[in-house]
Length: 279
Figure 1 (spheres, rainbow, N blue to C red):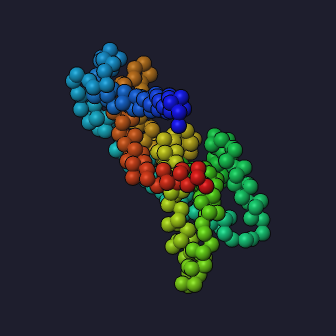
Figure 2: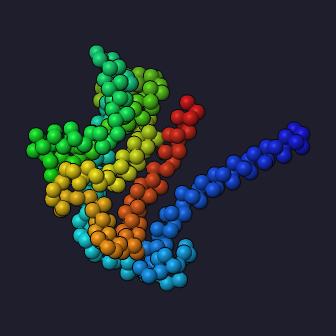
């Protein structure tokens, strides 16, 4: 390789890495600013622009948790997120396996309907969901909200999982049948372990959606006791004044569970993205 080509390759790689570094800093800096601001006071949050504050005010976290029924809303969001993600994983994995491996009348039409549902934005389904839950007497109930959120996340999850099940070698299924596994047994013992990377994507994607959801909760719930965690964050915003340090502390606490889930699922997500790119 000539000196020119080496210099060209080095220059291109340097520019790519500089671009990626700039993107990473752009994504990370707001998170760092949020954490730093949670340790400041209302007077210094905009005057002190340093990432590491001179004086750390840990009491902001205590005040954020102790005010506005933060614990109750945090528990509500935890219950909603775990229930919805569990329901989506079970239903979408079974449906995706059926679309991928089973042969039944109308299979392609049903799958196209699910794909078409991905084109409808989430707010577009609020009105029919409200009417349906109202007729079923499930509005203003935690169970109704969980069912609504499960239905919102099914289409994308089924699409992601089906692409993985399509790549599953048929030899694995044949070996499972020889061992006496039923279709349900193959789904549990073969398909689910094979699709761990895709399941990680489904879990993180839907956990993030449910954890940050607030608009649908406002529509479905009349009782404040059933509201998710975003309700507690809104309590830090007054009519004339917003307590930014407490708001940043609440946002930091809110972001921690999703960050922890992502850290534990990271290797599966990377594996899933790599397998999708490489085919």
